[in-house]
Length: 124
Image (cartoon, rainbow, N blue to C red; front, top):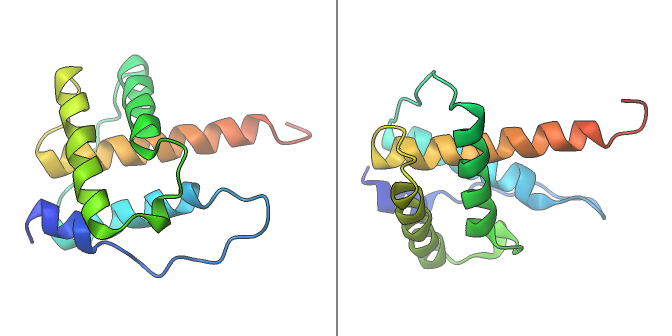
């Protein structure tokens, strides 16, 4: 499947979120996984260097821009994916093909956010 078609169509059944939860944390992960499957993309096993990972995560944060990912129409997802890929390219953050770069950025953002949430939990 072509990358843009995969981004457009990757709308899994969004899980219910409870009050106070950020749906983007799981939605971006589910979307990325569906794009990965639909494009039959192999995600690189190498983890980006920390400074590159932070820059990629910041680019994805701007990509989401404080909105709820699950509420975006398919064409908005494709448009914003293009903007994200262009920003990553300009910043020299290429992780392989277009699909690989997109997936590494989304997975890196998800991982960074997960680590940050662990740090703010009581008792840690």
